[in-house]
Amino acid sequence: MDEVDVSIIYVNWNCSGEMLKSIASVRRLATGCTREIIVVDNLSPEDISGLEQPDIHLIRNPVNGGFGSGCNVGAKAAKGKYLLFLNPDTLLLNDVPGILFGFLEKHPDAGACGAMLRDSDGAINYNGGRRRLGLVNEILEHSSLCFKYPRVPFIGRPYYGNWDHRSTRQVQCLCGACMMFRREVFFAEGGFDERFFMYCEEMDLCRRTLLAGRKIFYVHSAELMHENRKSTMQYYGTFHRFVMQYLDSTRIHFLKHYGRVYTRVWRWCIGGIYFLKYVRHRRKEDLEKARWGMSFV
Image (cartoon, rainbow, N blue to C red; front, side, top):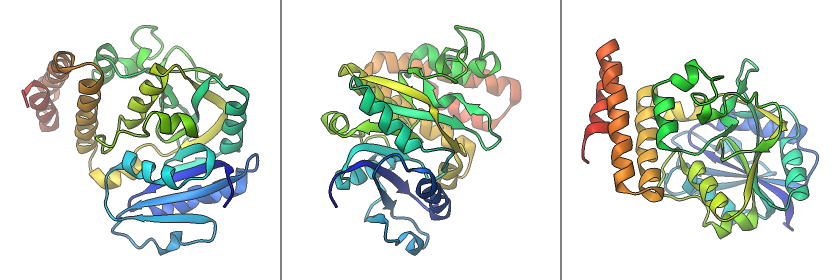
């Protein structure tokens, strides 16, 4: 195949049914650019024969190295000028690939962009464009303050809570459910860091992109529905295990970008937050997170 405008890359683990619905929305609505569809299966236990279709480039990965690793495999096989990473549990609401492609064509200083995310009830999910990981933002998030008081300027800062996400603007991070990168930017930054099995890999790549002098944009006119965590919950089973994986990925991120002292302070803060939650609610899950945060491992 000759070069196409956009390579749409999915990573599958046991969710081919959802993915086929997402791909159907791509076929129906992605009309503003030439495209290819690449699916990397990370050793799913399910039967994936339904993904063997003429317009799907199916790659059977012999190992499950995680989301970022699967994305890197797909990117290496891609022929697109731009790389669009989509989660299996997304449904396009309009021509997301064409809109994001058009935006990057008109903004050569942009290294990446993402779309507006909507929950299944139609509400805008502010995770589409958020601030980078940091100690203050983590405290506000794990304490739930930023969710309880999202409109308060300082408290709502992790997700730009005083911005309604109905306009296009520069952001520090995109959600990995939908992010388009210039091919040359993605490979210049080395792609996704495969030390992240799941979560925070997109924040790491966005941070590296910004440090390289490229801008990142949230494009409100591109819309898709994202059934948040539906695919990953199949893997982890419980919300608690999901949070533990997120915490460990955040630990890797902080060690990489801020060093051991910063990471240790962050873990103590997280441990303190969840210990207070345990004292209040007596949930054993909170106690496990508290012990993890206060440990020296």
